[in-house]
Image (cartoon, rainbow, N blue to C red; front, side, top):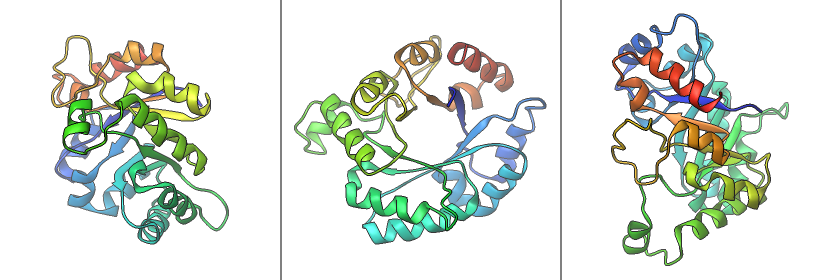
Amino acid sequence: MGRDVIVACDFPGKEEVLRFLDRFPEEKPYVKIGMELFYAEGPAIVREIKARGHRIFLDLKLHDIPNTVKSAMAVLSRLDVDMVNLHAAGTAAMMTAALEGLTRPDGTRPLLIAVTQLTSTSEERMRGELLIDRPLDEVVMAYAKNAAQAGLDGVVCSPLEAAKVHDACGSAFLTVTPGVRFADSDVGDQARVTTPERAREIGSDYIVVGRPITRAEDPVAAYRRCVREFVG
């Protein structure tokens, strides 16, 4: 599976996201639909963007008891998205149940990945607020191994951790990495960031890029720059 750039379409509603996507007359970027847009517009926006020819990463980060997540995943599997996620902190039992719910009767399913630690979470916050008294890298690797053992396709992690995840879980285990900024961009609220070029060197399979593209003066040019720097 080749590398790709996923554009985080974190817009407040249908009008804004479709206006943004209309700016791409040639490309059909892989897009991420997150909580803000999904909660505003519901499944209809997923269907509309899919009908336009875009691949979709539905980023809802499910985290609940196993049976609830299994039932929710069964609903999401009917939306014909390409990738969905959950929180690895929900335990291996929850991830196994999610995989069962996501798998359709014909055996097909979207890719399922697990969030290890959010890229806005520093080790200091993890220790001080979440009371996880282990090094951040160790926690990420443990969560990634749990996800692999549960049968998931990969994890969401910082690009700084991608190579270590591949070492621990194999080269086919996907690393989907937010926290990517151009060298001349503001890091915003991210704590663990790198550039598209460096993410490629480290071994990210997908990078998720939002504001450096969506808020750029010329989003198409910014997207093409990101693809050029990451995919080559």
